Each structure stands twice: as structure tokens, then as C-alpha cells.
Length: 282
Ligand SMILES: Nc1ncnc2c1ncn2[C@@H]1O[C@H](COP(=O)(O)OP(=O)(O)OP(=O)(O)O)[C@@H](O)[C@H]1O
Ligand SMILES: CC(C)(CO)[C@@H](O)C(=O)[O-]
Ligand code: BAL
Image 1 (cartoon, rainbow, N blue to C red):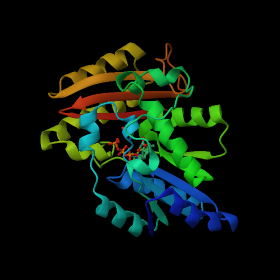
Image 2 (cartoon, protein in one colour):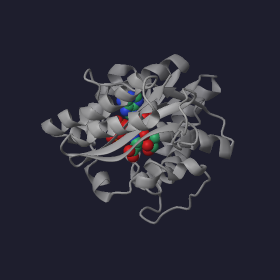
Image 3 (cartoon, helix red, strand yellow):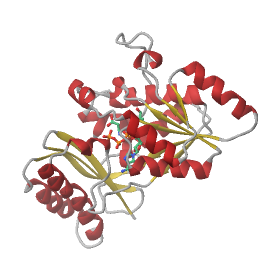
């Protein structure tokens, strides 16, 4: 695997491959890789000839400076994992490489639709402008045929699809299912911050989602939410930001029970760590 740190080197490495007709997949990440990320790499290998993984802790999508500062950066471990997974290139640029005028902000404001402002967008204001800003830069640098994203960040996938539509970008967006620990916790780089007791308490989030999914046919919407919220609220150290049964396009709460395009989304602080998870109803 080749490790690349600059846009110029990325260009000179990828151009001949593209010219020879090879299909390129991009897997954008912020590093601290786990099996969830590796599932994206494996899926990328099925869809393309060459896989480029980017590792970049993007400052413009962080709304909490402490969250940015403590974001895990185990680079040697990540390179080892990607090498073993058979990834072809890892792009690990500096902040200055991606944002030459940093910390002076660059102009970036695109219309992502009303769903930008709910759920994560409400709790992390401006987050999706930051996400789409860096994803656009990565698309522009790699010009992938296909880009891989995880369903774990459900709203992020929607925002990226909206950006692709809004800007008329020629890239396929592939969405991969959530990879979980054996006990149900969604894998996430931030899980590393959980203490042993936080780790146990965090389990209530996937349990609440699975409870709603399992009882969807039996109970009314209000009852499902009340019972699942009660489950979460009885666990010490878990502070719920939202739990909602929403339409997968608008992310607004569904008013009547339907299984069409319906997703249950949750976000909560567990100890000092904010986690998200979701389950699609079908
Ligand atoms: N458990 C998972 N299963 C499938 N995809 C995942 C999982 N966790 C993360 N991803 C996907 O990997 C890509 C990179 O995510 P990222 O590097 O932010 O990791 P993360 O584990 O989501 O970290 P964090 O949530 O702490 O920011 C995203 O598209 C994300 O949705
Ligand atoms: C897509 C992404 C790599 C952009 O920084 C990030 O939001 C993530 O890891 O999900
Ligand atoms: N995995 C989503 C990136 C973030 O939380 O900033």
C-alpha cells in the first residue's frame, strides 16, 4: 500500500491508473479504524479495481473543539490495518494541505435541503457544511467512480447524496450496513473514549433501537418511543439528545405507522462521549 500526504502526489499516482481504465473507489474516514471501516474497504474492493482510503480528521465539521482535540489518531495502527486489508492507497494529508488558509475559513455554503438542520444538524450546527466541504475536496482530488459511506452516519449519507445532486457530481454513492460488536453496540472510533461502565451503559442505545424494531407491528408509535425512551432514561450516565422514528428522506418524525423509508435514529451522551446509532425498519 502506498501512503500519500499531498494532493500533487495523489494526482500523479492516480492519473495513470485512471487513464488505463481502472475503476477507483474512495473510502473517506477520520481514522482510528475498526471493523466498520474495513467492511467499507471490502465492499469497495468488490466495486472497483483500486481502493483509496483517506484518513483526515476534518476540523471544519467539529463543533466542539474538545471533541476535535481528543479525536483518536493511531496512525501506525491504521496503516497496518489498511495494508493487511489490501487497500491500494491511503491519503493522509495535513490540515494545511486541505485548507491552505487554515485557520481562516474558506467560503463554503451549499443547499443540502431542510434535513440539514434537524437531528445531528441541530445538535452540531454547521456540521454538514463541514462534512460536505471536505467530502467535495476529496471527490475533487480523487475523482472516484464510487465512494463508500456507512449507514451508521445515516444523516451524513443523505447530506452527501443531496450534495451530489445539488452540484451534479458524477460519483456513485455506496452505503454499507452498520457493523456492530457482538453485544450490539455500533462500532465507532469514539467508543475508545468509553470507560468500562460507559461501555455497559452505551448498550442501551442499540437495545432501544432493537426494541422499537421488534415491536413495531405490535405497538403504537407513541408507545414505542415512550417505552424505548424510558429504557434509556433509567440507565445512569446516559443523556438522550434525540430518539425519533423518522422518514428516511426528510428525517422528520413519521406521523403514521409505515415501513416505507422509515428509520429509527438515536443520539446520546454516554459519560463524556456522544454516540449515534440507527436502525432501518423493514
Ligand atoms: N460501525 C460501522 N459500520 C459501518 N460503517 C461505519 C461504522 N462506523 C463508521 N462507519 C463509516 O465509516 C466512515 C468513516 O467514519 P469515521 O471515520 O467517522 O468513523 P466512526 O467510527 O463513525 O467514528 P466516529 O463516529 O467516532 O466519528 C463513515 O462513512 C462511517 O459511516
Ligand atoms: C465522511 C467523513 C470522513 C468526512 O470527514 C466523516 O464525516 C466520517 O468519517 O464519517
Ligand atoms: N462519523 C461522523 C463524523 C463525525 O462525527 O464528525
